[in-house]
Image (cartoon, rainbow, N blue to C red; front, top):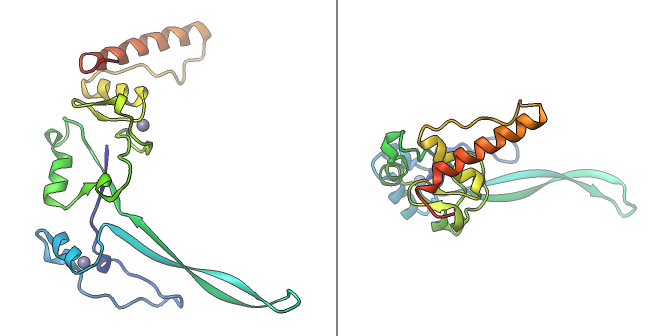
Length: 190
Ligand SMILES: [Zn+2]
Ligand SMILES: [Zn+2]
């Protein structure tokens, strides 16, 4: 999975005021279809980021430190909108990422100053150049690279979880390591 930045017009989302009522929004660029994210950016809607304001209750104290009331403190949070896109050559002939970038306005997270994220599903660690190959993509670790390399080639590796007996664990682990190494060794020098 590749983590990409995903455009979302802020006017497609309902925002609440401190009192719980909804904020009036302008036109939702997404309804225009086509390459709507270009217009959305030009209008200054900042579609690759979501800004939210939370209200945190804060006690109001008197001179002696007694609570005499409560106020709501606005807390602004801004984060990159992201989505995980399948990279596997078995899905959309491996064109999933390119399609999303060309047809849906997705971009690399590095375009926004963030580290590229390991392509192993839900991993989230930064990628390491040592575990990056043109054939399989960019990963954080030897484990994640080799697991994907094996799965891309339809190689099923035995699970260690569930094996309880000591010598058997060693056998399974050795076999698994062999298979994983074999899966990736044709594509890179380790
Ligand atoms: Zn917009
Ligand atoms: Zn990883």
